[in-house]
Length: 358
Image 1 (cartoon, rainbow, N blue to C red):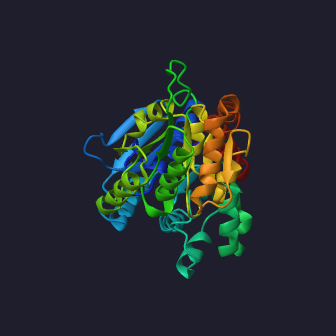
Image 2 (image 1 turned 60 degrees about the vertical axis):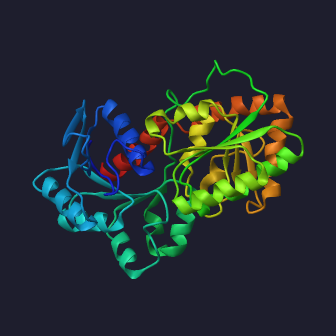
Image 3 (image 1 turned 180 degrees about the vertical axis):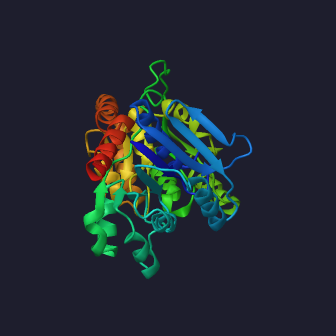
């Protein structure tokens, strides 16, 4: 198939945006399988306007404002023919492209609820989509409740992970300290304060536990977290933002991943990246996370996720019972490889598209 993929305007491809990471991974899989893929992204100073990698071509256009970006996309696309167009996370862009190319099947791939608020304008946009791809059953349920008239178009395709890059570090040296990793945007809804308080409780029980926070937040909020960590006596290393191209090293040096989200997570890409590295995950049982983590097999799900005591309970299990934690580590890797490789994601998505187009 000859497919056009249109990325959001915020970040270039390749880059650190989770949506863009997913798009590029899927595009590479399709290109390797013989499909012709064009991925349109925003321009970046350090990237050429056109990059070619076999059957994959990345086109980078001027962005500025969202409206200006859409004008640039349309300017490039006009006069070209595609079997299908996929637009990620931007209902307005998808609707605009459908109006411009009414005969080409168009898919909207949604990664979260952020850009699909229950408004008449969004409802009118979704009505234009031929297909709506979602990354979890949880997201599909939420969207079906908001837009029941479009529920029949929705198909769930779980995201994936590069299991060749994200893999266990077999040379990792044993340590008396148990290092917990948090990776993601450092914002209130991600629950880092709950995690710090939970680790404080585990440390009071006599366990040597440390925390590494990978990600960036607003200066004022970061100061609050530093202050809380000092007050609770929790050793925390704040790394700031780390490029996704090397972030696997942080996973490989940790003992488990904590994902204490306090609001709905559509999928939680960080969880499968951790699992691929052989890390058990202690995560809030919210949104699509429960579709990734199997409680007691590859990690633990925290039902009362706003309670530090509940996160501490399951962290303590990993710290206390080393052999069980090792078994979870093996299971985590197995589940990531067998269920969440990018090849599985790309294959399922392509089968959805081919059944529609053919």
